Each structure stands twice: as C-alpha cells, then as structure tokens.
Image 1 (cartoon, helix red, strand yellow):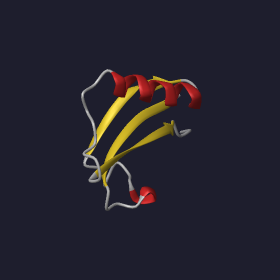
Image 2: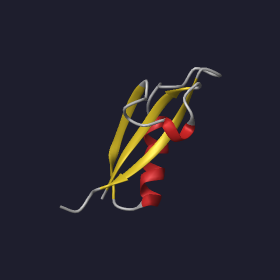
Image 3: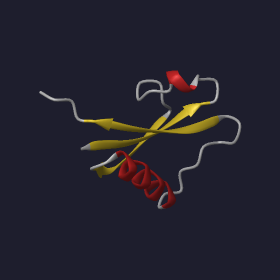
Image 4: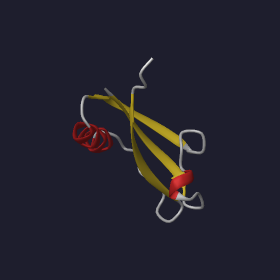
Length: 70
C-alpha cells in the first residue's frame, strides 16, 4: 500500500531536498495499491482541488511512500 503525498515546495528548494519536512504545504491523497495508481490518484486529487503553486515561486512534487515492514 502506498501513501500519496503531494508536496508544495518553494522554487528555491532543490527537488531532492523537497520533503514533507521542507514543504510549504502537503496535500494527502487516498491510499493506492500500486505505484501507477499512486500517480493517478495524485493527478485526480489535484484536479479536484483549487491548490496551485505560485508560478516561478513554488512547484509540486508527488511522493508515493510505501509502507515499511514491521
């Protein structure tokens, strides 16, 4: 199972450094069973919201985080 996270980061933050800890905002999508479904769910979630990054000042990054075995 994957957690769908859509991070909104400042344009000054390197893509690799854009994490839930450094994001300006986080949009959580519904859980997904596959990586493909995770990407689809992130697009669907964004399409249903009015959240948009400020052009030139912010960007979005999708993170599909898998559950860690215990």
